[in-house]
Amino acid sequence: MNKKLAAALSGGAVLVLTLSGCSDDGGSDNKVNDWAKKVCDQVKPQLQKIANANAAIQQQTADNSKPADVQKTDSAAFQQISQAYKALGAAVDSAGAPPVDNGETTHKEAVKELNASSAAYAELQKKVDALDIKDQAKFADGLKGIADELNKISTNGDQALKKLQSGKVGIAMAKQPGCQKPTASVPPAATPSKTPEKPASASPSKKP
Image (cartoon, rainbow, N blue to C red; front, side, top):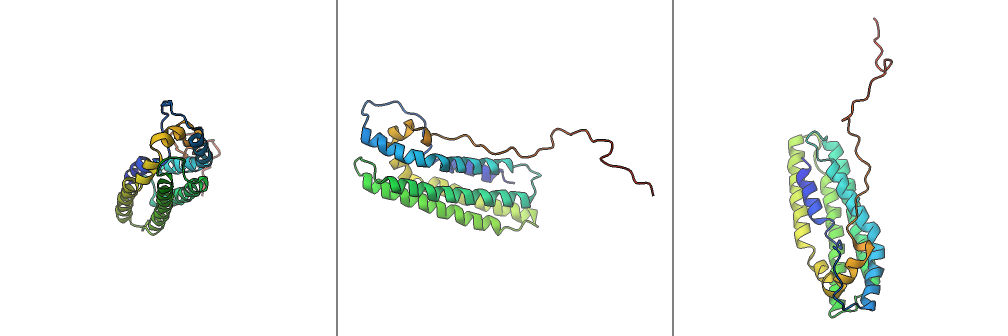
């Protein structure tokens, strides 16, 4: 029931600023490197929050997950992602424009895009909270609709960020540990895969 949502989330939510390492083209620019460090140092904890939220949704993808549990997990995850994007926008904004051609325009567009993503995830949280958890079929349909919207956010909302991460700036950011894709650190959900031995006193038989 939640698998489509998890797939859509993993496809887009951590797209922002998660760069694979690039080789140095030889045109190392200290000013660009300084800018990248300033941004990436602030970005790291926010990327971690997004990865953790993504992982939390991934954990609630079992077919037997209860709608109430899925709703609670997804709502909290969307709230966390929304707050992270808002903080990412503030981090990029505070760093100022990167010292490259058209840096000012690219910078403004990236900040605008991050803030728009924050608002979009906040809206998704409201929609998840409004789903009918008493009707499993309606709830599943509602999640499909949210997953479709999530796909739109992922595909339509990263053009300015891609531009920000191109050229010298992209190379400089890729070298920064703070802009590398984080590993999610979410406590594993309690899965009763290992059946513990029941103590003899666990279920005493009451004699009438």
